[in-house]
Length: 376
Image 1 (cartoon, rainbow, N blue to C red):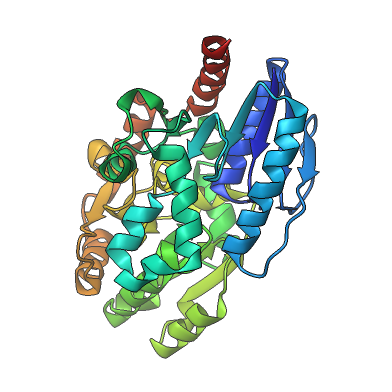
Image 2: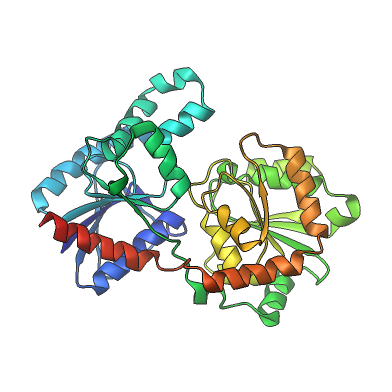
């Protein structure tokens, strides 16, 4: 098959982008050809695929997206692809990989009424409607059952157009550094001793991920505990506001930003807890990665994969219907002092061994082939 993959922008450490590469690799291995259409590509091009830069104009995100989509449709029409697969919402897709939360539902919940009359809202809501409306024929890969409910509540999308897939965690990779040697290695590099508590956050878009919430929770700990607790943040984002917040709350020496990293398993090996107090999160891959590594997790229930914490009995979940910083502060202190820490770890490892957290890519490649067969 001749496949077109469509993505606004490529950043090598993003979860969406990593899934695009994994799906591309699987499809290539099955003998299919792939063109990836994007506005911008950061990093090396993947072997075997053809990356095509679509011309665009505009100063705002929504104007650039509109320009990209318009030019893309003309290119796609001239090349006769078997399937057009989108990793962002846009018109003209045969299949959409739904990694984002429902835009219309989020804006309705979080923003002022007048925000629904802005050019940005009109553009992105129209793109979303083009995928999810009942008149659309786009098939949808859904990675979060919770988010499927949100989409259906807005668009009444037909159930048979959704295809639910499991997480796509690489178990061997995540566990590659586990053990005392890996733990000691990273903790020594970070200047931690065995009695220090290592809190880990992974992900870009620091506001969305709740980095400020974690800093406030760290600062709320009793002084003796706070002195020996360190928060490390891996990801790409604007660090200065959070460094300023850490200084303001008196924990500047206990908060460190490490940028984007490719050696994530080593940090799971050394971490005591993973924090994911996201404001909004379709899935939260770091949750299932942490569980696979046997690291207890504290996350907001808004995360699509938060249910895995409860199913595994591998940490604690923060209610997100009305987030309370005071409640997070108390829960972090409870986790750090809990006698359940070792049980959470063992529960997580056992859950990851008996639960399919791994086969997303194979199932998606099967789906791509089945959709083509159905449309033939």
